[in-house]
Length: 465
Image (cartoon, rainbow, N blue to C red):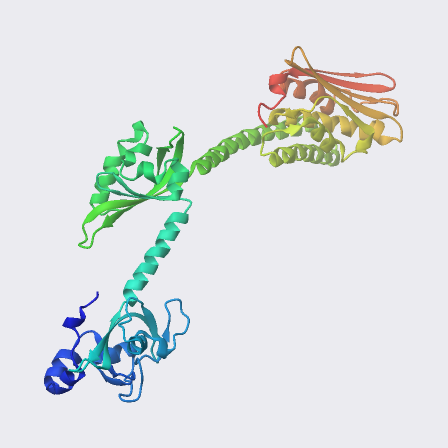
């Protein structure tokens, strides 16, 4: 906004020679701030707009260079009045323009302005003062700063932020969009947004555009989009209409958030919930079976209560292992140790076999069997004395198709198995083997007890860990 000097350089004498009413109408009532100084910088005149902009009325003939209380450079550092554009213009005899400044009013508020100083000369061409026009650009600078901040936010966002016209042609494409979809801005700007829409989802775009034309915002619309490498991803879209100065919708701003991980997590949770529901129902069945079988073999209520409590706690220990592994399974060695710990010194337990993760069903039923064996040992066997040891060996045979396990207890007191037809024996010979789709056998001699189980590997080993 450079105004030619020839069109805006009246002499100071001409200003003084004007009729007051003319000067008032021409300068005093101008909507822009105007003031004059003599050649030493002393303020000689200012209009109402200048006083309103400064927030006070400076003393004519006393205040110098500028009517602002304080001045600052654009970076916020203080600017001495003698270095302001008006002072530079008079000192260097050149019109210092093109640099904005910040002024502070007496109430502490600040505004940004652009000065347009003009040298005033008499009829002989001598400099007799200067006239300055101050243009308040505070709103403009705020808008620019806001736009810069928004641009920085958009560019640094992890989400894809894209704008397009109503024909679907991309006009902006941020780094987040490049990261999510794999296309650079050079590849997308000027091209159709349908580039990232799978063929079976193209029908969505016309309906989205139609709603945008009506000025309707679309919030958190979940759909599928396609990356440059062909990978399909789950996204959540928020689409807003973009309007021009007259309020007409001219395009759309779209934010796309990659929710693939969220969707996969939700699916895993649902699958886990279904699995947990299934397992809990199984556990209810096992507990009911425990109650039924224990009650039929126990006449003393105290003994019944103790046995039920111990067996449910054994189930809980197996359940804890599964929970810690998010129901994917538990290792055979961990299961053995967890069931043996409450009854004796696990250092007297020797385990031999390949590392193996059991599927949840095998964890529960083998856990019940190990509990019954450890309980019997604590009452009558190795864990009830200072001598003897327990060896648990397992291996996989038949070319990886069959699981074999043997619990051997020897070297302790004379072997004894609770009741001949107790619940523990039922678990070892029937419940656990049948639940694993296999066979079980319990043998005893004078100085040892052996429980063996054989089952298909497909019912034992977890398929994934």
